[in-house]
Image 1 (spheres, rainbow, N blue to C red):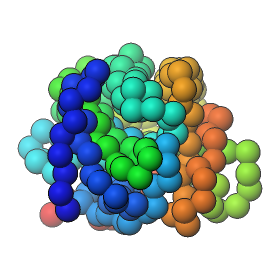
Image 2: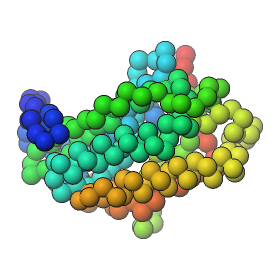
Image 3: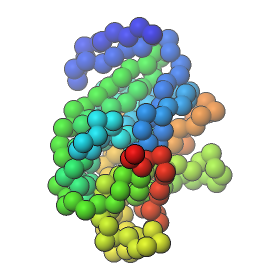
Length: 227
């Protein structure tokens, strides 16, 4: 695949000519696992890219969106970094660094890779849950069915004392995190000429996400365990 950079208002965009699929990192903080998904015109998949101290393989949390132009897509990626800094950095352990926010975005038959450096560590404490445990955040759409249910798996924002032996998060912690994610959604929803979207693997148009909901039970995955 040939890519070339395009200089624009916000710096360099990478242009991937005539490509109609993307390698999308699995939603959550999974590692180096990809699936091929269609990317419709004016749709993009954004990623928060993080690294943990002592581990050179990044975590990715993904979020779909639509944008009417390259400038609007770049503004959405910029806001992803800003809203993490404003609302989640204080809840994230200092062992985790937000490296950048980035996306792949399709427009008029071409796909563009956009990125915004962040390079900030969390300012929360240590003693968080192991890396195979995450805070599960639901992406809410107006439709029923599995196709219309989306999730984000956020690592390193839950302390051991926040969760009981059954994996239930303290209600006060859920409430605090919900406020953070409400504010994050509000910031992203406010980016001009964009919409927060749940993208679909069948190629149909993305569904509008109207809110995020923090789940009261932690999410666990065995494949996130370190050997």
